Each structure stands twice: as structure tokens, then as C-alpha cells.
Length: 190
Image (tube, rainbow, N blue to C red):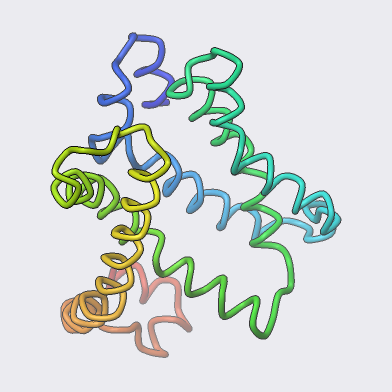
């Protein structure tokens, strides 16, 4: 609803992307879909693997294709990719992946939020390192920003997340068995 309001009110892309409430579009949608899909019949949500890979490919190139056709990549490209994200995410939640793919999925998931936090700073760092010699829309700027974002994300995931998780577990300890066994007890404790 907030995103629709921003679009209808003519908010700039910066206002639709940067503030935490606006930037949470993918994260909040993912959280809602994750819990909703877990409650539903699994077979109704599965995509054949070739269709899933086709959607992944379209998701990755969609903003570029939109821009190549002269449409606004910050409107049609961004929200079109968002619409493609929904079936991809639902299928991923419902699929039974294991082994290396599951480990890779978990690792990439662990990098998602650090990547979100670091990508803008990494683009600025790319400008600094290149002494503003690279066009911000060039492939070289993108590749340098991507490499810096990934390095920052891996460092945050490896060193910062464990410290934050230790602090979170001290503040909000894991629920005890007694709380889990009684909904009323959970409400009184929560």
C-alpha cells in the first residue's frame, strides 16, 4: 500500500527506493510470501525447473530490456522485476532443495541484506577509487561496484552478523519449551 501511494503521488525514484519503509518492498513481500506459502498446499505452487530458470533469466535482464526499449527502468524496470520476483520466491520457498544448492541458497540469502546495505556505499567507493573517471552507468563502474559490494557483504556476513546475533540472543533469548507448548503462556511471555 505504501509503495502504491508513493507511485500514485509521483514520488521520485529516490523517495521510492531509499527510505527504509520504501526500501523494504522486496524484504517485506518475501516475509509475507514465506509465511503465506508455508500454510498452503505445496503442489499448487511449484514451477517446472526449466520455467523457473527462464523466470530467473527474465528477472535478471528485465530492467536492461526495459531501458533498451526506451521505457523508464526506475519505474517499469524496477516494479516489473518485482512482479517477477514473486513467483520465483514462492517456488524457491516451496521447492525441496538439498545439498550444495541448499547451502548456496542459504549463503546467498545471508548476503542479501548486507548487499542491500552496502551497494550504495560501494558505488560511492567505486567513484572514489576510480577518481570519478568511470561513468556511473558504465559496465566497468557496475563491475567495480559489484565486486566492492560483494566484498563488503561477505565481510559483514562473516564478522558483523555473528556479533549482532550474539547480542540479539542475549536480549531476546530462544523461547523455552514450556512457552512453545502453551499458546496462552506464549501470549503472557511475549
